Length: 163
Length: 432
Image (cartoon, rainbow over all chains, first blue to last red; front, side, top):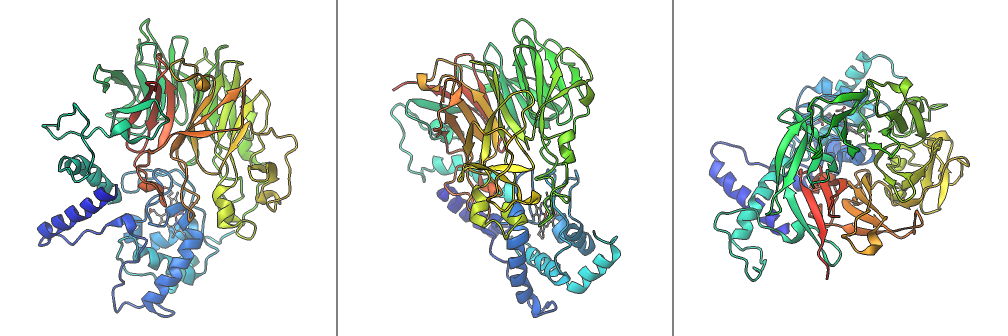
């Protein structure tokens, strides 16, 4: 398997070179526990993007990792991946709501359905939610603008009062 | 992206070995393939006890779950994802050891499939059907009878495993739509619901009739309760006892971090095999079985602290395995092909863990449990390993194959399904 991996990387690199003019280089998501290098100059509250990502990693490890796994790959058919999904890359409000309200619906996520219950994580602070989402948006091969605590606060205020 | 990447890698495997970068010596008599075909890895990549061989009879089925074999050795496979609109495929083994799909039917996806007395039974996540078989054990009519309908399926533990006993009783597992019956499912610190209402319609084995159409809950009997989620179950026909494998509850550390370490949470609670009699209660959600203390422990949702025992009336497991291995298939071996020690013992297909993270994952193998006088001897061993294709799994997506269903062929061969890449394996004993 190591050989195949090595070959795969070699081939991918080869393909990338071939496709370099047309496509951005693909990332190898296999070992994507590493954080994608942050986009410089886009700072979040409380110490900037790098600090937010590192706090977010701690939140992720404590509250999300069991289900979405260390590489963001999720669990086939149970917990969806956080790699390049429309939810992660897309609308900020929808993404914040997933964390605050939880998620348990038979919907397709990148072509598959998932059978498990994600509880509302409304016990996390605005800062924690912003940090964890900024972390996943800049990890596992994702590279999307971070989330600000103020955005979380706004979404939280718009939701029916939590139990 | 990840799966595309993996598929790419697997697609490349033959190319790689054809370039002989992988130093796999050619056996005498082997000729290098002219056309590049998938290289026959010895035993299809599985590690088995001496004298056993394995082959992949077919690959790429859409999430094959449970299996049933007819008297001619054809394998009926229940698919969890429809293939060209069909949820069951019939496989016929050719002289070359490869299977072809000879028929596809049944327009529902699902897990359960079972053959008994001239009928093929199959389940979706809400219903149970049966197809009449002809004298050759082929399906006589592709339009099934609907036996049971309206079973609960709520985005958690939906698979309905099925069995029919010699007295024509239909047994259906209905898994809990909850992890541990918390007021808010899987929410940190949320306490257990008083008089857990999930037990009314799920978390147990229900019994229905085989000769009555459109049965609802009211037409059935809750045969046994307090079983969180059972996917593998079988009769030990030597003494007609029903044995089930329970998937134990998840996330002790996530939900109660002050009471359980990550390491404890990775191995607790046990995955239990129970011998179930009518009216039995295995204790979910109030208790779980701790295989280290060898005790029934009060669940933290109901005031437990990891030490307090409870559940005096709950049955004890027949044998307990480490946590989260996810037993999806159970089969009592009645054949004579395998050596004598296997006769009337149990094979268990462990799908492999996910909620051991951040600890390494475990499972992804088929285990053998020797039985004596209708009870497990207490020892168990890994029988078939190597499904995952990697030594260490930190994230379940890394596993190439995940064992799920088991069935025995008329010649005593053992079939294993893999619902990740859709492979069906045949394991035979060739002797020393």
